[in-house]
Image 1 (cartoon, rainbow, N blue to C red):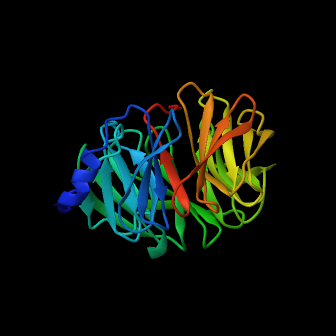
Image 2 (tube, rainbow, N blue to C red; image 1 turned 120 degrees about the vertical axis):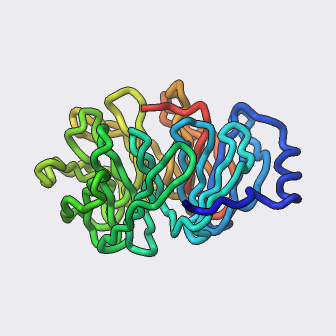
Amino acid sequence: MLRQFGSCGAVLLALLCATPAQSSVVVVLNSRDATVSLIDQDTFKEIDTFSVGKEPHHLMATPDNKSLIVASATGDQLIFLDPVTGRIQRSIKDIADPYQIGFSPDQKWFVANALRLDRVDIYHYDGRDMKLAKRIALPKLPSHMAFTADSSTVFITQQGSDQISAIDLATQAVKWTMPVGKLPAGIALTPDGQYLLVGIMGSDYVEVIDWRKQKTVKRIKAGAGTHNFQSMNDGRHMFVSNRVSNSINIIDMIKLENVGTINVPGGPDCMELTADGKTLWATLRWIKKVAVIDVASRKVIKLIPVGRSPHGVYFVNHAVP
């Protein structure tokens, strides 16, 4: 079993505990500053900033929604926050290079993509702790992931080899690997589970893949630096961020078409949508800000200063696909 360590020093705890409880805290990871910014969702004001370990890139809630896990990639640890207040709860060390993380839908597996180590680590999950099941070497730079609804398979994009792989979770074996476009990043399944959508960051499109046949069936034109996905929570549409063209597109997952564009400055990356579907938040990697976007008008309504290279973003009242 992996060792668990105290969540933070006395000084940091005192600072965090002084922060008033918030029901609308936005958590933003500043990857180059190794910090977290806490923002009041209603006032758009920063509440606090604190350290969380080197290169925090991605984050996600635990299946019970009692904790928010921050993956500290070069810090080789997972840091658990209270998802409501943003306060540190605990940390787990000896998780090597957790760049991107994910839980299988059945909550039995925890997967960590070790981007700089060229491997995927699969852990058994018991509701609190992770026990390593297997480390799987992949060609180069495993990046993002997506799970099938039945938790049988996890798909991994590999930015360094321009491929995606399918891994069987029960056996922890690679089932297949296929080539895709240059620098594949974000990956998602269509609601019917038929197709994989892959953001081709080295170009300007979403690659649509029939994963059962391991065949590309379409390329949906997006913007330069097509990167990451966020469901619109309507069973049909998906946002996709374009880091180079400074835009976010809306993809119709039934028609497999680009049906809208939102202009967003500064390299939009990760996104989070409010539960009512009205407001989209996006981290802006190049300009140290977070954008707040009105979905109906497709306009940026607020730019909020944060730390360097903001990446992951989360708040409790988010849309759940």
